[in-house]
Structures are given as C-alpha cells and as structure tokens.
Length: 332
Image 1: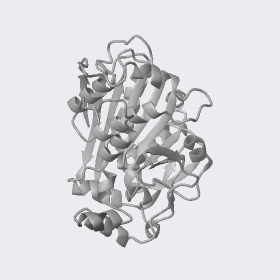
Image 2 (image 1 turned 90 degrees about the horizontal axis):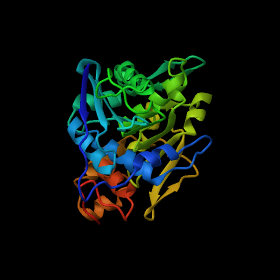
Image 3 (image 1 turned 60 degrees about the horizontal axis):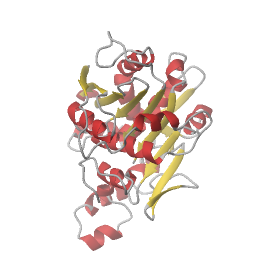
Image 4 (image 1 turned 90 degrees about the vertical axis):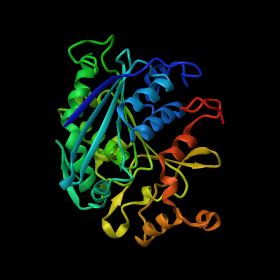
C-alpha cells in the first residue's frame, strides 16, 4: 500500500477558476436536494480527469480551480497478478469542511488494468441489510484501498489534517463528494454503496453529499436492490455522445444496469435523460469503436461509438462554463 501526502500550492493569476468553490460545495446537495450543480460537476469532473496523473498534478489543478493550499493524499495498491490497480485521491479543503474522494479510471497503457475491467463475473457485495450483485473486477479494486480510504475519511471527520493526522484543521468534515471517470466512476459508485450500507460507514455516509461520475460503466447487476435506489438519489452520471464505455459490459457478459440520475451532453448542454443508457447489444461494437479512432474523419464521425470520445478531456471541455478559464488558464 502506498500513501503519499502533499499540500497544494496557492493559485496565481489567472487563477483561481472559482473564487470560493468550498462555499459552493457546502451549499450544494443539502438535505433533500437532488438537483445537479454545474460548478460541482466541473470541479469534480476536472479532478476525475487529472486523477490519471501524479499527486502533484492533482494538487496543482485543484488549487487552480480554487482549492488552494488543500491537502492532497494518494492511496494506491497494485497486485498485478490479481488485476488490482487501485488508486484514490483525497483532496481536503484547507478549512477541513470539504473532502473530495476521487478514483482513478483505467490506465490506457496498463494491460492488466484492462484485464480487470474484463473480469465481469458477478460476485456478492455483502452489506449489513442486504447483499448486492456487483462486477467482480471493479469490486476487487474498490476493496483493495477501501480500508485505507476509510481511515483517511475518519481522520477528516475527526477534524484532523490529511497532511499530518497528528495535527488538526479548523473544522471537521461536513461535505464529502465522491467522483471518478470510467472505472473510477464505477469504483466511486461502489464505495458509496459500501459506506451507506454498513454501520461502520454510517458517520461518513451522513456527510456524503453526492457522487458525480463521468463515462462510468455499469457496476451492479439486475435486479436493482433497494439500497442502490436510495444511493442513486445522490448519484449523477454524465455521458457524452458516442462514448461506448457507459454501455459496458455488453449484455452477453451479464445482466448489468445503471442506477442514479443520468445526464447526457446534447446541444451544448447537459440534459437529464428520461431512461438510463442500456447495455451494448453486440460485443463486436467494442472493437469497432477502437477502429473508429483510426478511421478517416467522415467514417469516424458516422460511427455510433468511438473510444476517442471516452477521453476525460472531452468531459472536462463539456463541463466547463464558457465564462471560465480552463485549468491551463486559457479562454475559449
């Protein structure tokens, strides 16, 4: 198990992107509020995109967004023979009131990571009141770092600094957000289920404001248990056009389903979908989506799916409000 701790920098002009994102994160998703928040989505989507980078990059990008001098902790566990490649980042605001837990998605150049995604056997996720049927590969990656992640969240709940748990911050944890892109989104959803469904996670579950995922594959098998319906009220899944990953695993690999609110990007805006994305009907479309990446522009654009569209940069671009600079400091 690897744990790395780093303090984020103080942002300089033209940053921060948002003057006070902590206030927005604290105000959003209050009691009985299930409305998606565009600023929250942009902050979390950017964090999810840069979770593929190192701790310093995550800390710097989050500082640029407005979370300056925050604590950034990386928790990672690799067991390649078991296809475990689990990485989580925790970003604690300097005041301590907000924590963002972000899971890294599938690393494109990591073949073992892809094998874990393909391990679509259904296994039980045993909670206090019920047992869920979940994607084996995703579940294994969540469990690999879950105890260490929960320990960090307990530190935050007790008002300890994640930079040095022997010291205190001004406030204990009030608002927890969980996020991730691709596999990271599936892990975020499973962690939320685990926290909500166990007595040990109760104090953390009380502070869970929302789960925002981007290009998330399906992680739970049909029929949908009651717990998933409850957690689904806090889950906001984002899907851009022609991204094939939200349709996975395909129907032939098991009866997987989505839960929570689904938002699709259409006409330059995020629209709440009436029905969730369903499973891919033909596994052959997976290979076609890869080939579409290397096709001429006309053929590529006419393909129903393209793996290219799954890239986190597409999600970040679609999430950023037009009046804000990018995480690089540019407009447009």
